[in-house]
Image 1 (cartoon, rainbow, N blue to C red):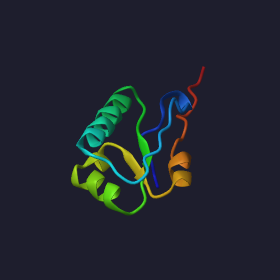
Image 2: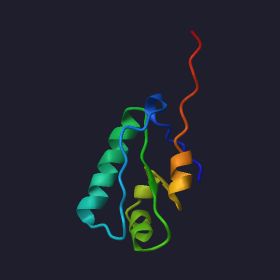
Image 3: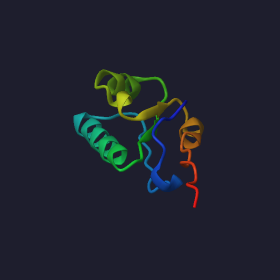
Image 4: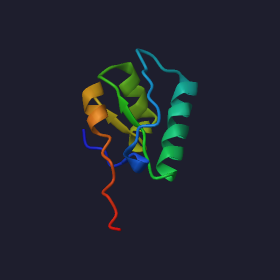
Length: 87
């Protein structure tokens, strides 16, 4: 899973686990969080295996503003720190 949304400063500030279901409020919250993170130079990476949640993220196009990976391991490795700036 290739992430094009590096986490600002290379630090993960929070984590969450979604297990099984999501409703419209949850989709809205994910979209809001992804937008805010992207606006601050970061991004949202979610581990979502095949199933109903993945279908809903694609249907609502949340996967266009967040990186969606099939496993937790791939999502964790998608957090790549930005390159160090020359001093």
